[in-house]
Amino acid sequence: MILETILILIALCLVFYRYVTKNFDRWKDKGVPFTEGRFPYGSHVELISQSRHLHEIIRKDYDKFINEDLHGSFFFGKPILTIHNMEMIKHVLVKDFNSFVDRNDTNLTKLFDGGEYDQLWVKQLPSLLGDEWKDVRATFSPIFTSGKMKGMVKFIRKVGESLNMEFGKFAESGEDFELKEVFGKFSLDALAACAFGINPQSFEDKSTVFVKYAARIFTMTTFDNLKMFSRFIPFCAELQKFLNLNAHKPKETKFFRDVIRQTIQHRRETGERPNDLIDLMIDCMKTSKDSEENNTDVVDQYENDMKLNHNKNKLEFDEDIIVSTALILLVAGYDTTGMTLSFMGYYLSMHPDLQSRLQGEIDQAFEENGGKLPEYQAIQELPYLEMCIMESLRLLTPVGGLIRVCTKDYKFPNTHVEVKKNDVVVIPASGIHRDEKYYPNPNQFNPENFSKEAKQSRSPYAFLGFGQGPRACIGMRFALLEAKVAMMMVLSNYTFVYSQKNPDKHVIDPHSQLGYVKGGLFSKIRKRN
Image 1 (tube, rainbow, N blue to C red):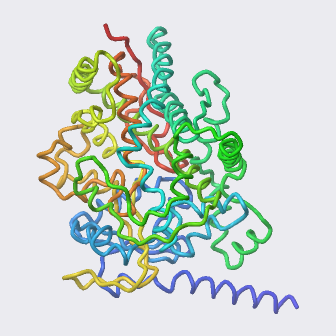
Image 2 (cartoon, one colour):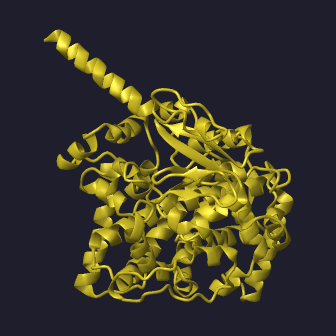
Image 3 (cartoon, rainbow, N blue to C red):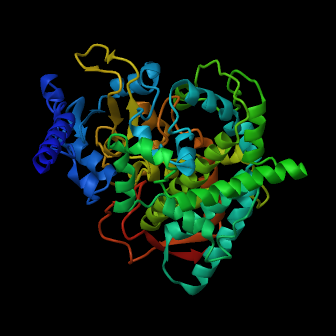
């Protein structure tokens, strides 16, 4: 009996070894430069051990193959093709989008295919596949048109007043503060106000669970990773789903789910309508429009590429879809916008001359509006403000790599490169953003990288802060508006001053899912005369 058991275990180990390593010759056979795979983790053990963040791994590999159009690697046994060439990137993200619709394959969705709380992550836009994703995106896109965003300014301005009061305390005390701790509170409160019409009072209540749980959502411990990666073990995902076991932050997910559901229930019972994002989502679920609402903004290449040509199927009213969409807007927006504002504050403190120029542009906008915060359209007409935001996103982007899954066998035009159905393609944003081919002196903060002339001189696919194509960030307009209003209100009253508490070198925290700086970023702040 013991011998039979040992033989079965050996056989299982051999099958598992073969399953992981069977594709390790894939890129060699195709003549694609690649990083070798090792059993069992693939090409990058540091990703599994969390000794290095994914963004830094992507950038290191990009630099290793910087003169190539592409390179290969392996995640466990999965072949990964990373694309450097701008024309090939354009084909993946835009021209041949229907061959690369999905961001996950059916195996990767197993990471969230567990109990009832995990299912909320499966139903979010980043996780949905194929026509289901197209239907949900086409349904909710009208929420983020310029016309709808105009109504959000009043919500964001209210939270901006609390942000200024918080900075006033630091200006008076003269103490250093961690930027994301402050801007994260602003971002969360602004999102909660715009999405649900509620005020978590993050600035007033230091122990608010809103901030605590939002921060935990995107902090991945080794145990969190083990729970999720266990679902790649055969039948493990099915067993966890059957037993209603949740792997991804169940306590935090339940908290935000309950907040969103209570908001929807309150609207039904009272008929109250503040015209926030929840109201707009409910409206979109009830409408039968087949095309995306027209925008009044000036349409650029990014906007054109983002359009989705899809005859949408009318979605049945599904509360879970609204909850899932609101959840990803809240927690992802908290981290991404909070990080971007933190990076911008940090870089402005390092460059007083650039900060002074930006303050001049903002001061003029306030003056032209009688000393009040300008309205939506005037906010969009501040070029240097947007240049500073985009440059901050370039240097420390929350999305280090765009993942696309090939949905049918595909050959890149005018090349010998072929990918098969379910192959994973990565667009290395964190590498491209630091490539001197596109950005002179790429490690320096230089908002002129996003002047009209500079943008015209390079491919539009050399900046991926919000992604590109139909699968780009649906909340891009809202995120930019939130960041612009925050910086306008702060810089009209205060000046960021560099803190000596900042690290000499930026290392991305391996436990930060979206790539924040280890140890944080610090600043002082001074009241303007």
